[in-house]
Length: 188
Image 1 (tube, helix red, strand yellow):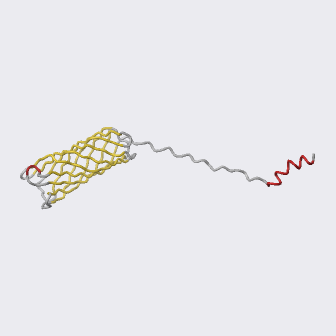
Image 2 (cartoon, helix red, strand yellow):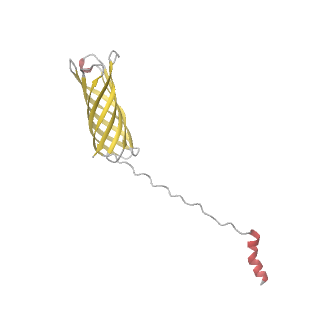
């Protein structure tokens, strides 16, 4: 009997008291933030500042103005496509009596980065200058922009637009206008 007890006790004596096994806590990964769905109609207002110049650089002036836009975006997963109609108007700093308006139609393509939407666009605009002699012509436009979703309904954005036309309204002037606008949109 003593031999049996010694046999049972020998592993404890030989190895000493075993350290308790402590398992590390398991971290649960946070659920990914829900994606932003950019699909839907929107309308908004913008304020802009830019420059207008001719190709030869003889005339260059700062411009500023306001605008309104309405559009539709379709979220296809990582790619967003859409269109926008915008109307902006402003004045030329160097020519106080001259005003300009631009009605812009844009085709938009962007990358869905969650609550951020960087995009590029191309399109056409009807650019008019109200001066002693009025000018009007259809010009090409292109640019870059980005929107950030402040909430599901309100989006703020920044957009850079270039409008240019060789021989604007048969005047012999190659016109280029560029503006940077701060935008606020409401999605329906």
